[in-house]
Image (cartoon, rainbow, N blue to C red; front, side, top):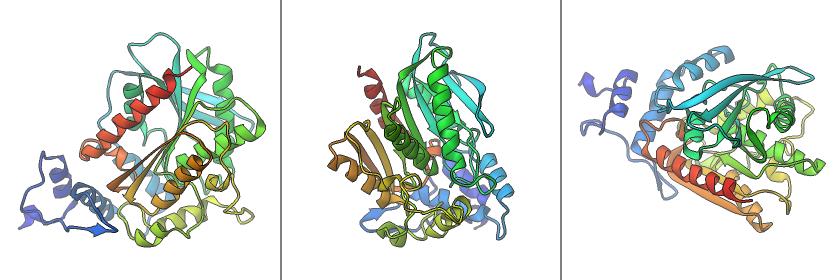
Length: 342
């Protein structure tokens, strides 16, 4: 029957319904002892059906931005201010989020969006940043760093460094606490956050009080079991990771250099506590877990969680994935605990 055919319109309606109709035959997918969340499978199928055989990078960016808010649930009681950080190379757009009930100086989460270093923006992650702001009762500063291939490595990391220095110098003016800044990012943004942290530690500069890495692309290598077992995972495949890397890395770059693969940097005693999230059905899963384990071996405080039945980027779909809401609550509680420490 047409009403139960896997069309984009039907899938959206099923996902937004309180329960998926029993007549919808969703495959039961189990891999390595993990069962894929049926709603996550539907979401992945919706994205697959929307992909075109030949997509330009411009079209990919447009489609990501147009669809990012579809399954978001952003709180409205947040004040936002669009700012700019002037750097030697460019003007970097920023968006500052604050709870609208707060007038005092606040801790801040410096957030780098995901998108393989090629797509994504402060707009695609607006809902996620709003929820972070509300859940932590802290400020969030989202960074619209330069994207590849127009601006390959190290442009994004240079922008991150510029914004960090801007934030340190402008914290008081913007009612932020410079000693309570966490770096955070999802996917490619997790790579930027971790690389920035290592650069700050190596140079002996003021460093973040916490690091949050959400299903991070933390290593440029492909010799990970999950790169094979989850090669055809919904939303992000191993082939997709190759494609993003080809657009981000210049020919001269060594993929295993620590500034590209922060996993290759040894954990340092002064490294702050880490929150690391991975997804069961994600080719990046095992590198994220390895990052958490490597930090634990260096006696760095780590909170590690694997969302076993979830897909890459699931946190951006809280309207249809209950686990996205649960994990966000977990993350916000952890950050509040970090910010409460002297």
